[in-house]
Image 1 (cartoon, rainbow, N blue to C red):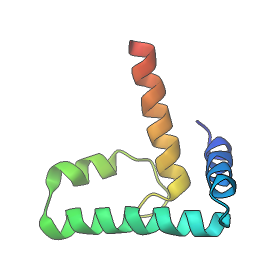
Image 2: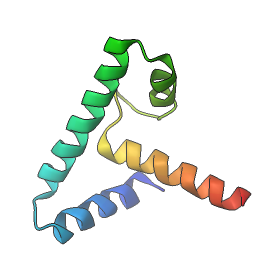
Image 3: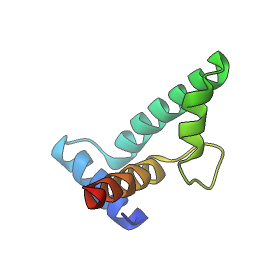
Image 4: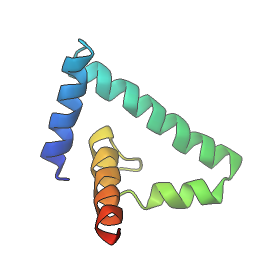
Length: 81
C-alpha cells in the first residue's frame, strides 16, 4: 500500500466516525508512541525488533507508515497462501 492509500484509509476512518482526520492521526500516534516507549522501558527486545521492521523516516513510525507496513505485510501473506 502506498502512503497515499494509507492516507485515504485514514481519511475514510475519520469520515466514518465523524471526527477530524488530525484527531484520528493523533490517537493512532499516541498508541504507537506508547507501545514503543513501553517496549523500550521494559526492555522487550522482541517488541522492539518488530517495531524496527516498520520503515519510517523518524525514530518512530507515523500512523500512515504503520498502516502502509501492515497492509504490505498482509498482502505478502495473502500471496503466499
